[in-house]
Length: 291
Ligand SMILES: [Zn+2]
Ligand SMILES: [Zn+2]
Image (cartoon, rainbow, N blue to C red; front, side, top):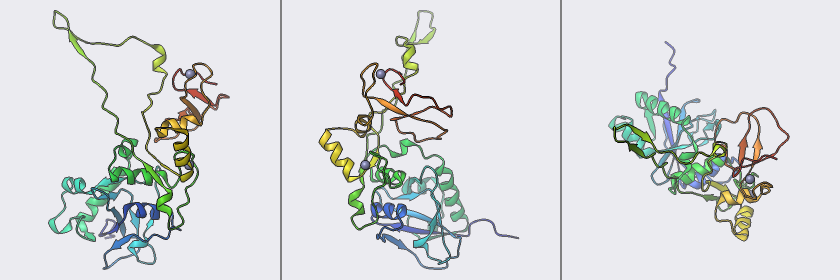
């Protein structure tokens, strides 16, 4: 019978994690941050990338051993919208690996353990949303860097990651995780009927997008300087400052129209409008005016 399942899964470790993330995004980068095991490696074998973030993390996208049979040069097909990372300690606590097949300690998983890890990572790849990039841990920072795909979040241009100083060219900005929405207040009348308290009805507020207070991203050196000189406290303010102010209400919260069907990960300075292209370029996120 033809063997279709994974027999072996190799692990490569990227230390330092920032160098490793850069090397993953830019093949011309001179960094060689990889540690790996030896043993039988066949073309097509899956390779999982572990980074020495705190806590250690594992990339959801697997590489494959190429024709050279080397795990440190595995071929990775970059998914949309970029790979993310899972906390390896939690993953190991949730997935039941045999004692001698713990992905934190070994360089190769075999049989059942290899299949379990591959399936878990595959499933998690689809759960990559913007909340994965909140907080200030190095795992969040590494996710932000991988998500950037080497582009500056401040100006959308590519960051030069081809030289030894690449790590100094990518300035990662982490942000606080937003608070959970306050729950609605439940009141009871004399008869014991419960109802929810509603705020004053504002029909326009239905049209307004809910903007976060800041946005995680990676900045090129030019944008770091510009942001500092112009005195912007948040990356969100910096992005909005590059758009015209609203002619209707004067707010500096103008989004640029984005046509087409983008699936997810839309930054708050873009307004998703579907496929019908309209003459207006701008949307005010404060009063819903378009022009
Ligand atoms: Zn920039
Ligand atoms: Zn406005």
